[in-house]
Image (tube, rainbow over all chains, first blue to last red; front, side, top):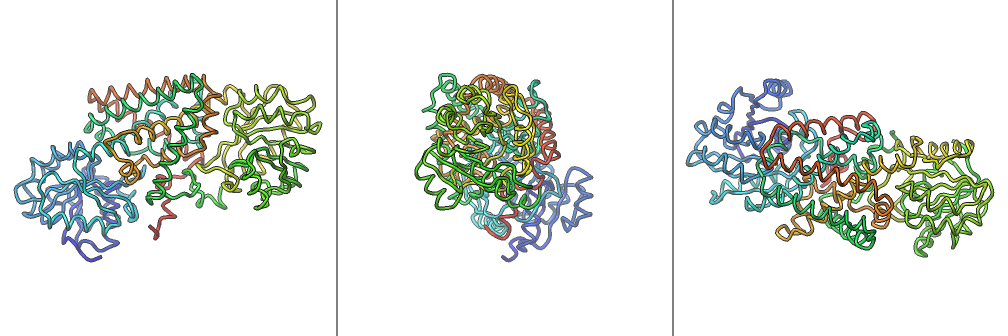
Length: 310
Length: 310
């Protein structure tokens, strides 16, 4: 890969931004990386680790002269950042973001950007349960999808450059319409997170089972929920508050379906349960065939890592 | 480790039995392994692979002369197997099982066993989403818990031998009372499985999001659910049908809690969501400290395996 942008500015230096910086350096996608974060502690770490070539105190300074500006702050903070940087953007620059919901970001950011700036929202479908400027790694996006979600008309040259940038960081790139994105992600990401949070909360709340029992015996399935439910609280709060309609729709369907299974269990309808569980197994096979997971029997155990250890 | 039993018989040769066989051989815990399975295909594979020293056509033949008999069939089949083997058990033998619920197994198996046979139920808290005689591996139980769940009085010598057997296979061993076991496991395993099955079912059922979209974009959280929801359908059907009371209790609590979060989202109560998500993150830390998972940022991605690949 060769250089795509001269100067890239990151606003917010958490898991996604720091992974993009490592992945962009790995492939030499830009000449200069500028960055800033709201927290002085994060800025200090970024300076100490050499995460960015330039760490500025404010977002307005960071975007000066940048060809690409990447908004990596929680969804609820995007509007304020856009208002701050709007007057300082270089003409012809591209502004993108990595937020998990797109309609709310488009509504919050779009009005603050001047004519002549290309706003092209995006969403990398990759993450871990860790956060902060030291949580990133260059491989995070490898073979994962990044969805580019243009809000209406967009300059095709700017779009093509942004796509090449993501491909250079290892991602598979697709484009999608904003409202459809928000529904698809509700199903594949937001609802699973909310449900995992709920289950972990229920376990914690149940007085007859101690926390230490829950923790010791978590390997039997619960552990995978806690991994999901350990994701960044601010990010997820903003996701749910900014994708309410889809959340309400899916939760309604989920509760309906859960009650159907509950009724089958109460009535002893083993055939319904067997058929249901057989069908969901087939969906798993589709995911493995699509290359989005391996068939390795680790069940979140990290079997390869554990071997010979433990 | 040295030999604990002369002859061990496995009834059912799926994931758990085949893993126990590999783990038992690794440590030399028995002299002879006998085994049988209901399916002729499974018996043929076991013979072909040399999984057992002796593969018999029937459970009655398999238990002849066995010092330890391990019932590795779905919970719903335990009673029938116990009725078949009861008259053929060696006096003084120990019968154990690996079922995921214990009260129902105790009620189904106990009445069929003759005087002088020690019945000591157990439950290894380990598994993968795979099943069958070729899915096992010796490391499955390493550093995982196996719960020994005696049903009333038990011979202390037989109990100590069974505990040493599980320790020899790599497990941490604890004892627990049957009804408490069923409640703890409902929280740490059964409810997470039912909820994962439900979420995968909802995703599949939603007409406006295609299956191929769900599969392609699963890396964002949904994938971990599909892994859980790919577990053996017969086993899980039997678990839910045989642990109804605890299932109903936890599902009720879960739906209540989910509706609380749903209400917070609808009302825009960001503080409640943030506090809730922060608290569940702390539970995750407890699990890592208890050695039941690593802090590696794989999020089910198998980061180490992926490196350089993809």
